[in-house]
Length: 125
Image 1 (cartoon, rainbow, N blue to C red):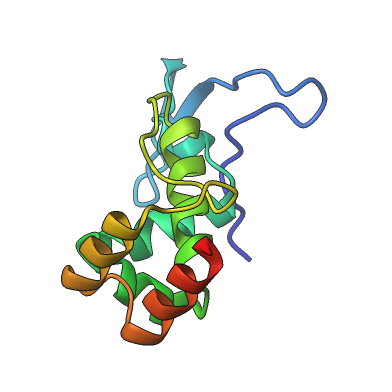
Image 2: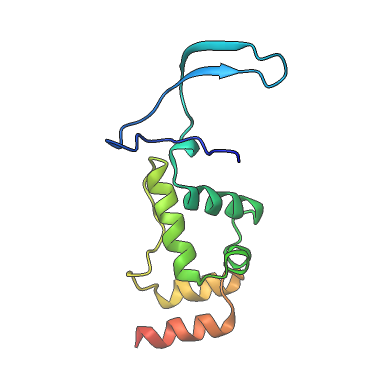
């Protein structure tokens, strides 16, 4: 069974550093201090979300379908991904209500369907 590379120390949560690389073919080993990418430090769930988000070229409707989750869940995961990569997020979190204009804009971009838009607008009232 293939083991996943850890991005954070399981004891203290600090960042880990790769110190050895080896060739699968000739078994050459290279020692040194190699850094991990920002993606290596993400949880497995956020890595999977990032891959699905990229696969769908950022189309939230496609992400919803692939993951079987709602629009607010996709937005929440996207905000968490952005934060964990070290950037500021402008994403609307589920706790924050979208404005009517934002809902209609998401509907126009086909990020949400009519039923979801109708539900979100009703929640505004």
